[in-house]
Amino acid sequence: MSHETTRPELTAKERKERLRSLRDDRRLWLVPLVALVLDVLTTLYGIEHGLAELNPVVLSLVPSLGILWTLLLLKALVLAVGVTMWRLLPLRHRAAVPLGVAIPWGIAGLLNAQLILSTVFA
Image (tube, helix red, strand yellow):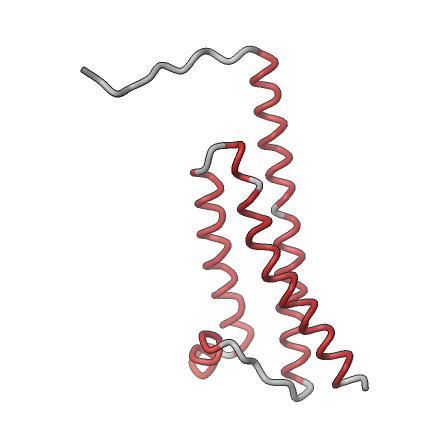
């Protein structure tokens, strides 16, 4: 006895649609990359101009790695987990991963920018 199920063969149209979906999902990774750059650059700029980092994980690593390497290491870890999950998930759920990574980084970058504008340039 077996729990295996046989998968029906995909039609040419279904294969083409699956490839298009995968290609579109790959493009979604540009969104978290833009959010990553926004977050890192605004964090570095804010710290250089007297603002303080509040993330306790970042604060614990900064003395040994420095702010730039700490941010890049943590972002790389999140991206590694995200890409791994993206590859493991079924196609229909993959789009959630890059968006789930991008949203917090984008919000952090925008909040950093708002704080910079209201304090450094005030």
